[in-house]
Image 1 (spheres, one colour):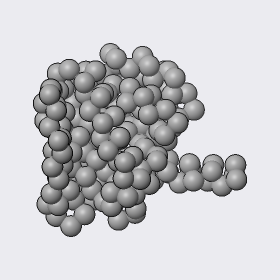
Image 2 (spheres, helix red, strand yellow; image 1 turned 90 degrees about the vertical axis):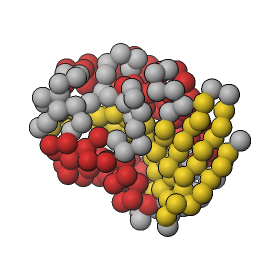
Image 3 (tube, helix red, strand yellow; image 1 turned 90 degrees about the horizontal axis):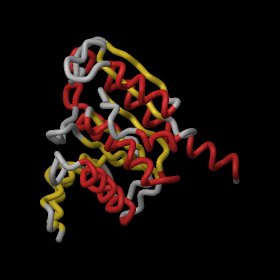
Image 4 (tube, one colour; image 1 turned 60 degrees about the horizontal axis):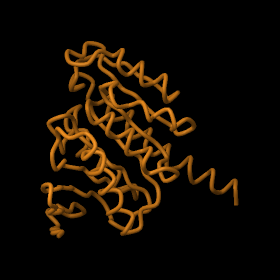
Amino acid sequence: MIQAVEVADGLHHIEQYTATGLLTVLWHGDPADECAVITVGGAMGSLLGPAGGLYHHLGSELAARGVGTLRVGYRQPELFEQCVEDALDAAALASEHGARRFVVVGHSFGGAVALNAAVGLGAATVGVVTLSTQAGGCEPAESLDGTPVLHIHGEDDEILPAAASSLVQMLTNGRLVVVPGGHLLSESAEQVQALVAEFVIDCFERKETDADIRA
């Protein structure tokens, strides 16, 4: 069972009731947008994300550019496989409304969730962003070779060392950016917000260009 309400112009609060808990999604933008970003939090869950509320900032900025953002609140944050399913369920919801291409973004524990969800979405994935990611659980990311991936990590991360992102970067062949600050990337919030927004837009524009070339 799903309930939805528009809490502000262009922002919907969606609750999906399941046998294993309540899945919450904050959805920025027009639900009919063909491009969608799926964001997931860390081991305790988060709808705001790191870097000064990155996910809210990203949703607001991208909506004006015709890209939807679905901020996922896990049913049970401590269950990894179910968290991956939560991200995929959000993508399925977006697909029902017209989304065809996805970028998945995850912080900390959510970095592994994002990478696994990206693998699950297959060819619909056009990009992935990990933020202060853990290395555990990221092994399937090796199959994303050729998909643009951006890894961002704080050089003074007090929970997960930047070496964790380096290990994952070896699997994805993505770009690694180490920024000043700790696990929440608060010290480099503006830089991180700009890096992620630019990367996401580039992923969607690149895919459009590839489609034009094939046509």
